Amino acid sequence: MLLYNIGIKLYSLFIRFAALFNNKAKLWVAGRKNPVFVRIESSIWFHFASLGEFEQGRPILEAMRNLHPKKKIVVTFFSPSGYEIRKNTSLADYVYYLPLDTARNARRFIDAINPEIVIFTKYEYWFHFFNEANKRNIPLYIVSGIFRPTQVFFKWYGGFNRRILSLVSHFFLQDEASTQLLKGIGITNTSVSGDTRFDRVWANAQNPKVLPLIQQFKNGHKLFIAGSTWPQDENILTKLVSQYPDWKFIFAPHEIPEEKINNLIELLPQGNAITFSQLRTEAEGLKSGDFINQSLTSNNLQSLVIDNIGMLSSLYAYADVAYIGGGFGVGIHNTLEAAAFGLPVIFGPNYQKFNEAKELIAINAGFSISNETELKDIVDTLVNDEAFYNITRKKVFNYVKENVGATEMIMKYIDK
Image (tube, rainbow, N blue to C red; front, side, top):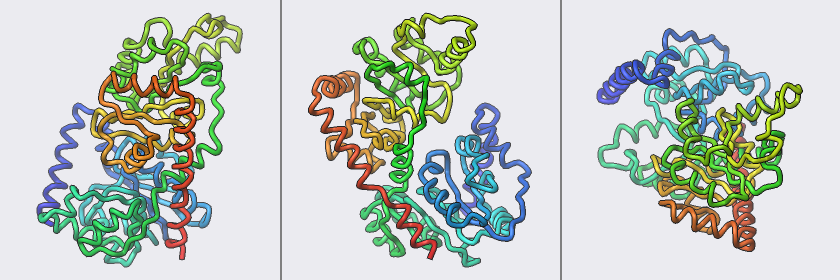
């Protein structure tokens, strides 16, 4: 435990130093400076590492809100990318940054919010918060948990980390392999419930938002969407635009600072690309009669760059093929949002940590590429072989549909 506490302190010092140069680190520090927590008689506490985990755990959060509308719900985030976007969510009564994991912070925070139950989604195992909940006999659940043999819990030197796992009341796991890994270290309070992300993306696909400007941009053409992309993805994806002149392309970068948006636009054929902000401004101008913009009326725009956060999950409803970014870095982003619409999904080579990607590849409905040539080959096949394309879409759609149901299973266990 001594080494753990030292590590927490060192991390705090490092992030404070990083805040001098990095805006995300600056938000992390500022959000935890002199926190004031409302004292609550009792609550249900959800913790999410970031925005992705929030969307993953959202079906449980929504179900709990519907079943217990009078209960106070507290949501915490570790990362600014989750907190800053969801700090005003109507699904929670209070939204906070998770305090640094020290014994004192854990006592003070749990004293304030008085949770009846605690629900963590997928990742993050904080000893002092877990230990404090355990000492007070507060049930603590992990939902959509997934484990790999390479994790520290399963190493000879992972004794302290295994101790953290022993403080969890019940694990709701994504797969049987995780069950067996935990069983191997003596943890048997588990259920294979699947991944709540299937429930989330399925619900979204059944009632997608209508986006008139996207309809106007597509204008009856086939549409390729590149979601959550990084520069490594964009360097090869942008080559497709000139190769498929009859297709429309939408790029939704993972990060949207002006500099990165400009760099992406420079990679695209000049004169036929526009940002969503520009498209919206021009459409508003047309509506008011202020001006007529030929780029809209003559339909000569082929590429649209999304320069905001929050549209991507709705954009897939208009797509015919999707590419999911991140696979040339630490790992791919959310393939299921696109798959829920029955879209063939393409992604980079680093997908091994993601069950859904491996399962989509296994049924020949997801495709990993390592370079520009492989990307062109699979896109050519999807574009030119209609039978293969239609079969692929059916496989993807059925894969998502067959994996829905984790939320109902988890809620039955928790609510009893």
